[in-house]
Amino acid sequence: MPGEFKTIGLFGKFKDTSVAEAMNGLAEYLRYRKINVVLGETTAEEIVSALDHYADHGEDHLDLGIVIGGDGTMLHVARTLAGTGIPLVGVNMGRLGFLTDIPRREMYEDVGRILDGEYKSEARMMLDVEVWQNEKRLLTETAFNDVVVGKGELERLIEVQIYIDGEFVMGSRSDGVLVATPTGSTAYALSAGGPILHPQLEALILVPICPHTLTMRPIALKARSTIEFTLVDVAKHCAHISLDGQIRYHLEGNEKVRVKRSSHRVNLVRTLENSHYAALRSKLGWGEGV
Image (spheres, rainbow, N blue to C red):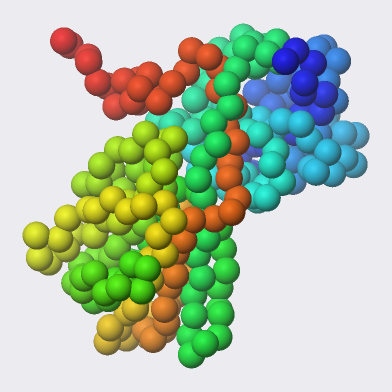
């Protein structure tokens, strides 16, 4: 509905001065549209001095967040705001931009359409991950794309026992294994040979990374599955867990890692022209030369 977004937060790629022009230009445009602009805390202070007087508003007052950067910036902002229910839209200043799908050159036009009510909202799944050691919880985090249990600095395989809903499924000797949401199926999981899932599909995927046994293939799981990884005979700091490729936690070798669907969701706002299949054609070059 037009006028629905009265207060909008701007989130730029942290300490990247290349977003300064877009940030300030969009702020001026939003103020012209009689919208209150709030500076998101993830934005580098040195490039947004013109917006400082808006920064006294809390993020919980936002009706919409606009992320200016790449998918990595969107992943960070989505985790930061998990649980707030604030919808997000992305302006792409990076490379592929599956999540930040508004091109920089079309920023004013597309944001204007959204302000005029010409948009759709998509609820995207997130993941909760816990690391346990001797009944003590060491880590609790939320991920948007994926959770990876991977090898450390040494070029050696790690062995991981994988359980799903308490049932032993497989032992994997590989570079690691990952669990991805449908949104994350076009990220690391795709590079590791996993399938592409529609973002509205209620499912997870489990993907071995460079498995020693080639019969180990990616598998699809029901969304409410609980996946548990137990490391076998892993030396200290020879394995780690990472979330969305941004949070890294070194494993000692005797922990259990549990991954399940989060109660939090990310609400992505997209223009009516943007769709999952349009993004695949654009970002992956499908149909070129046909």
